[in-house]
Picture 1: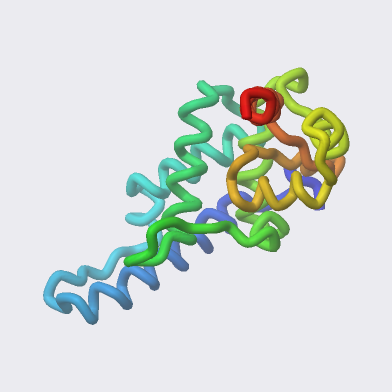
Picture 2: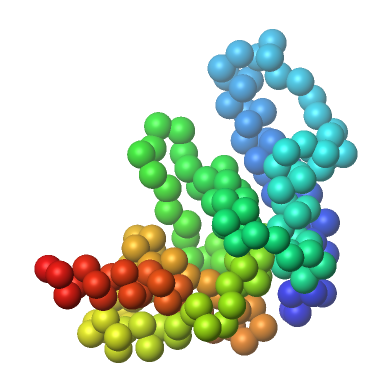
Length: 172
């Protein structure tokens, strides 16, 4: 399905409902009197709903915004989805990027970079003198920032991260 053809409102609503149901379940166990029922419209108007709407607009190319702001918004959403209470960190399963929400975030992230700021997986592996599986492992470990171009299906790593790793290798 073409990224522009996605019903981003449904994707956003599904994410809000998922996160709200998790929050509701936790709050019911923590302090039931504090639980307030919220409508979908209220969730849409809340901070997370607004962030998701903005990211959808970036993904669709309707707005352009500062890269840092886009990346911070994506990080916020990923943390809310995958950072379990009590955990020291979180990881995003690769399969997430195949979901509609993953595609939305991926496209917004891809649009945050200029093509010259990205390298193919093969090029990154060659420049670092490692194998492609090592690059994928470093992506999973968040040593290398990466983006996926939903149009071509290709994954790219951020050139600046590759150059930083190369400098680290040379100084070691």
